[in-house]
Image 1 (tube, rainbow, N blue to C red):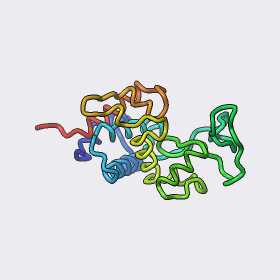
Image 2: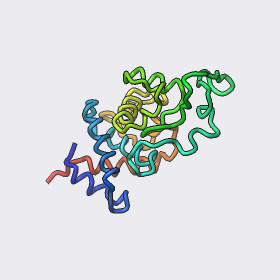
Image 3: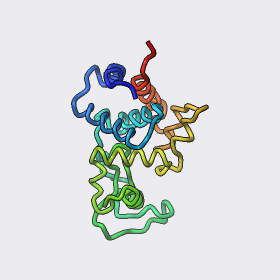
Image 4: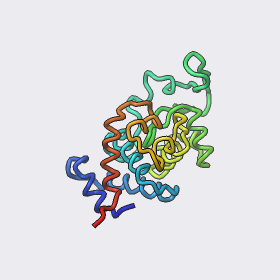
Length: 196
């Protein structure tokens, strides 16, 4: 990873010329979590940052889904199970599993599985997905292992492939793929130390 001054100089225009301390704190949390997870490929780190820039409306902080799942089955007390028409209600915990975090974790089963993976009571306390270090771990584990859509980083960022646009399939089909690719590339430019 490069020095943070180069990174912030490169991305400042994306933030209207100024980053708040909360935005910087969010970026630093993600950078630390990526290092702690052993991610050495700046393309992957940049893609996560670009995703958060988009998903969290430039705040770089974990957020609660706008509308809290209104109009979606995951915003009701239903399990994902076998897809639409095959949802099964649950009675406990008395929580709703709408989107929370850096990448909007949704569904009972996803909270349950991610909580098990990270050894935290995420199903019982879904608000833990709003804790920045926890949100970063959820994002990194999901994007690295392909836990969100079945597709992970290694399909799009390899020794011979760099696919900024299709990497969106790690999270959500090709929804806003071009825009997020642009954000990620700006972060990548900032993460790459210029040769002098």
